[in-house]
Image 1 (cartoon, rainbow, N blue to C red):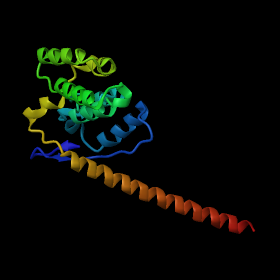
Image 2 (image 1 turned 30 degrees about the horizontal axis):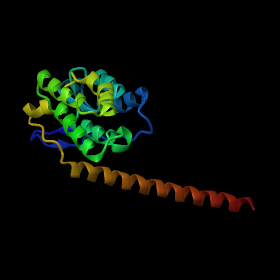
Image 3 (image 1 turned 60 degrees about the vertical axis):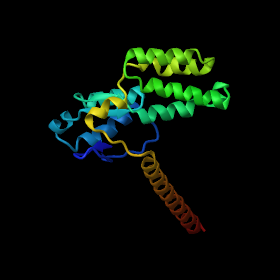
Image 4 (image 1 turned 135 degrees about the horizontal axis):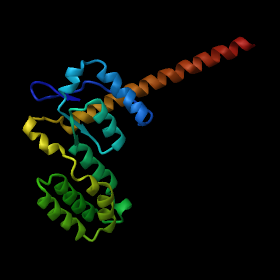
Length: 196
């Protein structure tokens, strides 16, 4: 996804991959970057990513002038996916509290505000939540988040539009897989009938 001249989000490429190994990620990003001149690639200012270190390393190699930022959407989605009542041995109301504090941590404007919210999390009496946050997010707290991009007039897609694109892709992939399965079955039956 990129930002056009009007500050609107635009999908510029998509890749489907079975895994996210460094060589595969490098090949995908290289396939994209070869479509543009070095000058154009050099003008890329900001790239939003999740916290995957392999992905970030490949993007830094391919876009040396870009600043990598954590995507707030992906960060909050990770919080919600990982901080569950079952995984963290907490009650539903504790989960809501934990997610609210973690969201405030993600939106912190400066180190002092971050430390204040971190203290709230530590005092919450949810040791597994604190352990999760400290192990997965606290070490990367210096990586800029999406909110710094407000100066760039970034207008993210509404969640419904992102989910719609995902649903369309999933449906298309499922239809293609069904077609392949049917074709393989037909060809298998054809081969078997020739043997007799």
